[in-house]
Amino acid sequence: MRYMKPGERIILALDVPGFREAVDIIERCSEGIEIFKVGSELFTAAGPEIVKKIHSIGKKVFLDLKFHDIPNTVARAALSAARLGVFMFNVHTLGGFEMMQQAARALIGYSLKQNTPRPRLIGVTILTSMDQATMQNELGIGLSMSAEVKHLAGLAQRAGLDGVVASPEDAHMLRSRFGRDFLIVTPGIRPSWSRPDDQKRALTPREALRRGADYIVIGRAVTAGHNPLDALKRIKDEIAGA
Image (tube, rainbow, N blue to C red):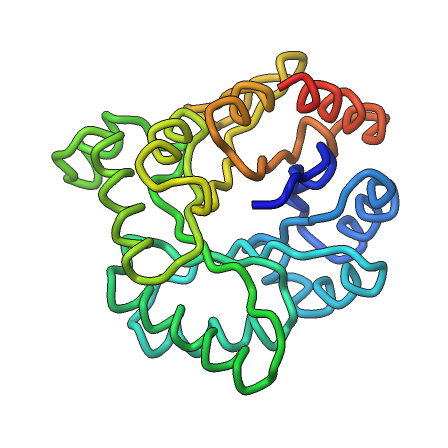
């Protein structure tokens, strides 16, 4: 992977309920951000218009909808994401190998037909809001957290995905196992100076990158403050130190 500047590694999460709130954050932060994350709440409220708005100012979109359905439905959703021109989007690896493979193949066919770069396709492993007890007692998964994440990431790689979304705690294990070209996107990032939130497996930006993350997803630590650009500068300085 090419060298990336600190600001290129940050994905800013637009975890807000509507179009106007998202645009306010975009306008305040676009100077310091290249990629914005559009998740389920915002996309359900604002739809493709928020993606078009981000593209209109020359920025990229990570569409974080975690597609998880029968293979044919997810493949069609993947094509819709490609038509939107997003930089990256995700599916949930628990949907299985065939679901992921059909999505990856649909993207390849689309990019060849349209002669256009395809979006990066990554798979969600285990949500960072879950811990070992939740995974075992509620989901009934008997493997350890790291073993399950490794298994799901391997499934994603074999299915043709570009990488995974995973806890920063798992980044070193995944980088060692799957190599330099396998994308690792880590939510659960909390700068040392920010307040705790609902992420149970969180690390600082510096720790995540040192463990092998390519991109870090940050939201409230930036957007909830009075000076988001100052917060972004502090995060970039921390990244540069990694």
